[in-house]
Image 1 (tube, rainbow, N blue to C red):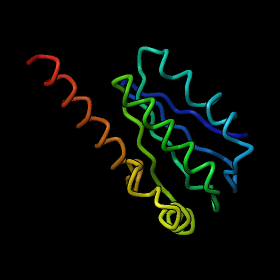
Image 2 (cartoon, rainbow, N blue to C red; image 1 turned 180 degrees about the horizontal axis):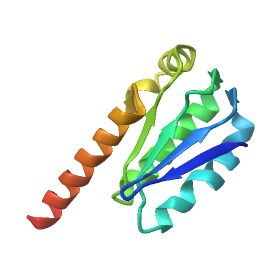
Image 3 (cartoon, one colour; image 1 turned 120 degrees about the horizontal axis):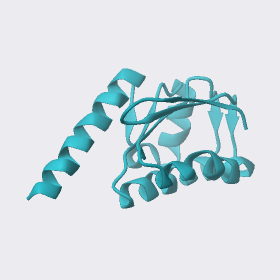
Image 4 (tube, helix red, strand yellow; image 1 turned 180 degrees about the vertical axis):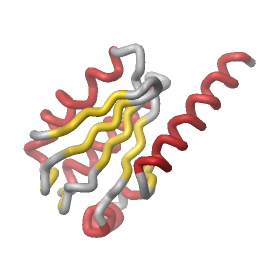
Length: 124
């Protein structure tokens, strides 16, 4: 699986460079995304701008990955989703389970808000 990683102070922006995310790519998704949970900066923005199609198994796996991030007090936001990918996830009942932003900039905003919420929760 091809992908591009951009790292900032608070998160990693990962752009998947594949036209289709399918069930046989779930292991590669883990290999790409899960190691970030062991780093100091754990938050991830997953950019799907180049992905034109996703199958049910890959969508379910993204939900599982997102859940793993939140269990580790890290954020996981998907952005720049193509309409056909959004429709496929919606048809499978998965869209409402995912943290999605229309643009990468808005995904960054969500990450920053969640970071503030975690900091405030820790101080109480």
